[in-house]
Length: 439
Image (cartoon, rainbow, N blue to C red):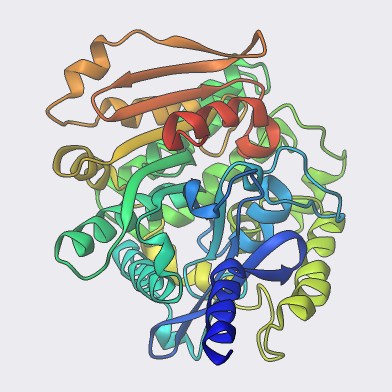
């Protein structure tokens, strides 16, 4: 009888892989101490797909931008999690097709926290190494995922963090430090080469009729000065001048939305921007996504209230309370490109590498993304250059375009701004299938 009880308990433990959390489906979450004094938070949603075991579907990681923006907040409730900001079920959530894990990184973002400012990361490589430690801790807790295909997705500043994270995780795997079925990395509307994004602002706005020639001239002059500072590797000054260029855009456009140039904006938006300091404008753009204040407050109330209570977050951890310092500390690294990291991924690893970009995004404008992709230099680049661009059609609707050569793919997403999963979920479902082959 005792042995039967033991067997039954073992079977139950194998089946009870998750627990009830906030929203539908089974979930898991927790902190991993990636270094002494640095505590990183993850939130895993097990897929709700009709499969006999969740390990039949891949694991997708989502990394937000900023640096300092929260994946568990913005990515989860504003873009691709199972419920939205108002608690309504999202019928196109990624969780329907695969396991999804949101990670608050760098430490200091979202629920992740540090015991003191000395424990913040300051460089992209430090961020990547912390993420590798997070995965080591995660696999210890969930060894069943070691063989499950892992796909890293990201957005915005994540376009700097994700490539180096993927590269360091791959090398750690090769050294035998971690078991992982790392398969691909896809960069969404990425800040991979910041100066290429900034230089694209003026031409894009002029061609769309959002600014006139005078506005274009002012934006271009500011952007060119930013480029000079980047070329001289004066990184702190370059970050400040990026903010000045952003302000020239706001003045010339009277408050265009940086994340979707066709989005409706309030008439007083420019005046509210005028009242902010340059540092506040930069922070709101990259970490708060410049969403309206009411929506921003709703998300903060949700994460510090019902979500924190449901997940049992310690009372001393306040979601987003360290985001500002996280952003500030990375100002020295903010304008540095990581094109060389993407090159290394393409040349020295078997990983699939992709970029998806919404055509209505300004902050990481598609023309700038295309320009830095042209700077890539790996042995199979000629295959990409020679490849034809094909249409992405979903239910007979033209949702975008794609081009593949070697182990690299570029996706152009129609009717989408910076938040492609929210703006065009049909196109993103195609991107997901291309990279994860779920189902």
